[in-house]
Length: 294
Image (cartoon, rainbow, N blue to C red; front, top):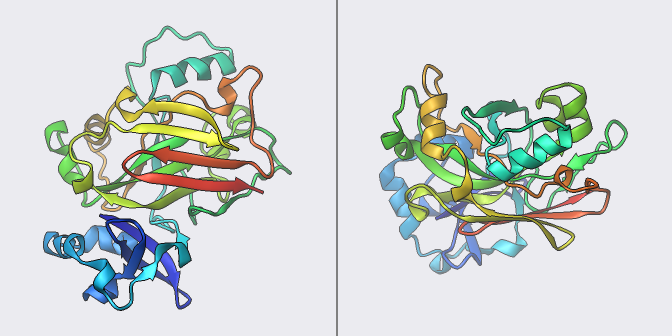
């Protein structure tokens, strides 16, 4: 099942998409009401989820063409910083070390965690502000993002997927010069519009088990990144177990699980994004997140 946030009658509205991806309806059409997607993720019951998944969207009188809607990011305003993994694909670790002119012994014994500040996520079809007045090394990173459905504390790997509500795509847009200058990820990855998310949330029942999905990015139609999520060094159950060990992960937490090789800084010379570039982040089984740099 695909859940969206869109603007309807001037308000942010949560909706469900038909199985063929052509139509959508507000949840109110099915007798459900939530303030926003974060409220839904935290409070929707299993019975209500089943009602949504079984709904015959095309038969409803207020079904609308998805293509006619103004899509917002599925979680437009996360309640807290997005948790992120850095260097979670081995080939990306190699290209990152090469860009930084650092030695790399081929070992990643521990994950790298950081957070990404976001006030409003950039939706599918939205614009990325390049902030070229303060930086000029704009990069892209396609990532599988996990949304937790309930509070998680001291969760074991074998139970971790029980805490997953669903998945979406994140483009972890990054300024490599700010990132390098400040010796940390937070500022260079948190500028306004630098968190692209969408086009929707695919609920966990559609992607059972630990997802192993083809993942790629394209810039102006040229494939740059091309891998599978099965190549993560640390998979989703591991991440949830480790992060929840002594740290409460609240319902609605978004975890971006890292990016494969092929980012702009990985090329020689680097291939940064510029105004007018179109970047597409694609994860099979979820969809395509497409944005333009302005």
